[in-house]
Image (cartoon, rainbow, N blue to C red; front, side, top):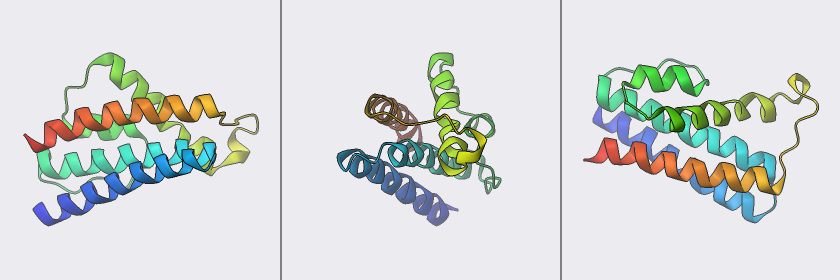
Length: 126
């Protein structure tokens, strides 16, 4: 399972780097989506590492967070819940035709994603 953990961790780091690159290119919706993907992949890595099991094929971050067993502070979990919605808002525009990622939304999402990413990564690498 260690090899699978490392693969998910590397893919999570890659998605976070993609979010940074997307913001630099003014691709705000893509930035938000890549942030969601980074946390999804990192939480799946956490499930593998901490529970020694393969994660379910879901995209909602809160069930993945619960499944991981990580004791995340409520304030951070609330932010994770917000970021989770970007998977559907960006990928399925027909679900919310009014959603438009602004530069501010993208920048704030990336900043909070980095904080949460570091928090989770620290728990996995100590």
